[in-house]
Amino acid sequence: MPFLGLGLHVLIALFFAVHAMRHGKQMYWLLILFSFPLLGSIVYFVVEYLPASRMQRTAGKVANAAIGFIDPEREYRAAAEAYDLAPTAQNKLRLARAALDRGQAADAVGHYRDALKGPLASDPELQFGLASALLAAGGATAGRDALQALHTLRSTRDDYRKDEVAVLTARALAADNQQAEARQAFEDALGRYNTVEARARYIAWLAQQGDTAGAQRQWDELQQAARHWNSHARSVNREWMRLAGDAVRG
Image 1: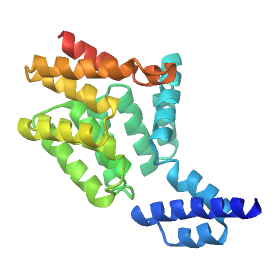
Image 2: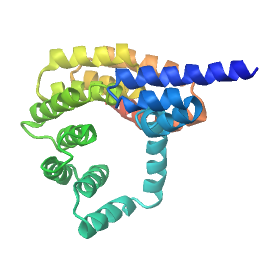
Image 3: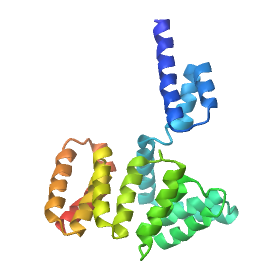
């Protein structure tokens, strides 16, 4: 039995070592993982693996939604106060996120662009946020500018939130009036990741393009999948179900 436990620790360490190499992590992680298989794996999971995982993002969204429901202005106030006290690039990024969540997309674009001038210029979260804010704000060049931000993101971190970047790219193509490319990008996102957001955004786009039959077909498939969700999945995906349903109903 002790040998079985030791083997399992090594296998877990090997899994994280492969993850580290595939995602361009620092080579010292390999030394940590194989010198201290159990402890090293725990540290790698907490520091590198979990923050980039969909599970962590989902949990964070649920927590933020709950806080926002109780006090919608809380995070924006806290972010503004933090930036007033210490106008760092990190606090500017926090303020930009809070402004976008508050519905102040134009302000968020300005905050993101300001943060781009600082030491976080290559941060993938900043580029992702800028693209999201640009599309929310709209404007003649929103799609083109969002595509540029996403191109910069992928050139820096091509493993960053791949499922969400794929959907955001499709939306940016649509905003740039590249509708054939947008359709292909939506279908690629569905084929690769099949997330609820991808299907809901695709349904909304199909309805906007006047493809009511296609939107209804996708909506039927989404509803069929939703029948098998537990209460947590229904809560997490409520926003996307509302978006898709409203689009189909016109």
